[in-house]
Image (cartoon, rainbow, N blue to C red; front, side, top):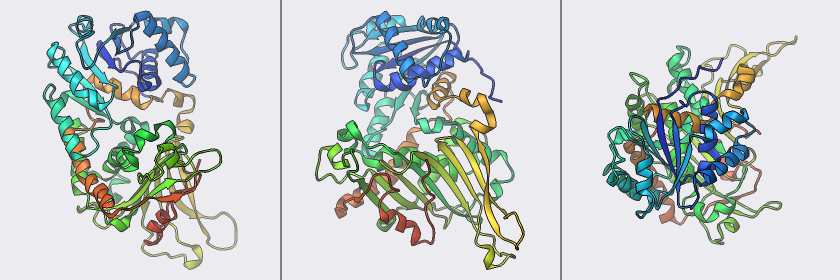
Length: 484
């Protein structure tokens, strides 16, 4: 059964960039679902803030249209929509000037939680933080939410953290990574630390290797100009895949509390070894069908930015010494899937002989699509004719386990925004985490730039460059198949 809904305290949530793509696609539809679920109190207020010169009614109309377009078919009674829109307001604000700030300040009430969502580019973070402070809105209990990218290297990340720290304490800053809000990611911690079955085996003695895959079928499209300045390493590995790696590899925290969890994640990042250049494979998708190539999307025929990357990492600690972590992510691949696979070692001795084949247990955690987990176990193949072993999955998908209630599982943004209102930072990144991740990432990027490495081309609809397969084959292993 889906967990019961616990209402949050009354709040004023200001969404800077309230007319932007992220607000329309994720933030506003997510807030509407939380309102329909009864988690938002009647006293809650949401204020959009952007440059557009519209009034409250105009913004409410835009919000209603966004919920209809991006709500994934979610419906509520008409009177519920009306009640939600009554809690919506709008102020035209100049993020880098003085316009609109006095009006915004007058709309913020006393006696409620104050949260400010920076759904804007990082270049505006400092301007908005400074103006919140100068207008008396950066109060002791105020919270700010900032979206990635958290810098593009260690130097810029430190500068960004320092800018925010001028006006807000670390415990007021919520760096959001929507991957950490996914139900399956949180279930990963429950599986690890809530079951005596797994934790004794969660180490180099029993785990052969771990694979983390985030594959997409779409290309960069109209984002080519932006993406070409970042690439798969900066866009995905340094944040999303790094966070998944931390949750898989971290030691059990003493308590399930924000700083205890984030302390253990930080230890993992700091224990990551430098990656050998031969253990990195970068690729660019070629043209295919009616779809242009990456270089055409980037409008740069000589672009050396990767749309695919695979690498082998090691963690220097007692738990994981010698166990490789294989990470891969890319655009225009065979299937859209995000998965963590914990591949356990073979049994030390098979009593069934070579004809039975080699078999091993695999715990696969699927983040998308069809969130859930499977555990491959070895059994005898039914029927006469001797002992033939096969692997079968013990499958727990949310759709099957929860039935119709699976539709009620909250979206990542819904959960994370409600955590901001509660003041719970467990699923948000701390400043030192971000800097440590860049400190590991920067030398890898600098290395291939100094070597003049060029990404390998790969055909759309495949699993990436052939060299990524060789990365595994050299170790006698293979990537799990990308399945739709």
